[in-house]
Image 1: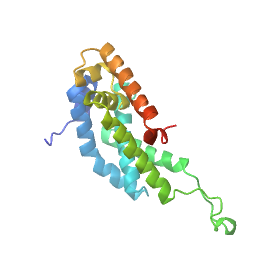
Image 2: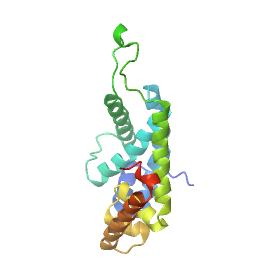
Image 3: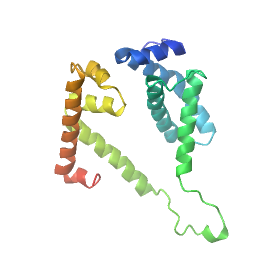
Image 4: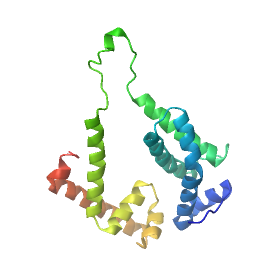
Length: 194
C-alpha cells in the first residue's frame, strides 16, 4: 500500500470525483488521521472500541459533508475529522444514563447497566448480520455495503460495473428484498430482527 500524501484540496477533489479516487481519499483519511483522533478520544476518556466506532462514523460523516458541500474549509480536514470524532463520542456519552451517586442508589437497584450478557448479545447480533450478508452473492454484498456508506447511485454503478443508476436501484431493491427474505425464512435470524 502506498504512503501517498495529499493536500486537503486534493482529498476534497478526489472525493468529488467519486469511484477509485474517492476510495483512495477515504483510505488516506483513515490511515492518516486515525491514530491522532483515537489518541485524543482515549485521552478524553473514551474506550478504544468506542473510539474506533466513532472513527468509522466520522469517515462517513466527513465524506457526506464534502460531497454535499457542507464542509466549508474553515479548518483543515484533520481538525474537522477529529472534531466529528469527538462529537460522536460526546453524543454517545450524553445518550447513556447518568448516575448521581448517593447513599440511596449505591445498592444499584433499578440501575440499567450493560451486563456481559447484553454485550455478548450485541456481538452475536453483529455476527448473525454478517452471516446473513455472507449468504448473499458477492454483488449484493458490494451493492448493500456501498449503499449503506451513502455512495450515490452513479458511484455504486461505477464501483460494481452495473452500468447505470437504474440498474443500481434495481439491485439495491432486489438485494434488500433477498436480505429480508433470509430473515423471515430463518428462525435463527428472525428472533434477532423481529
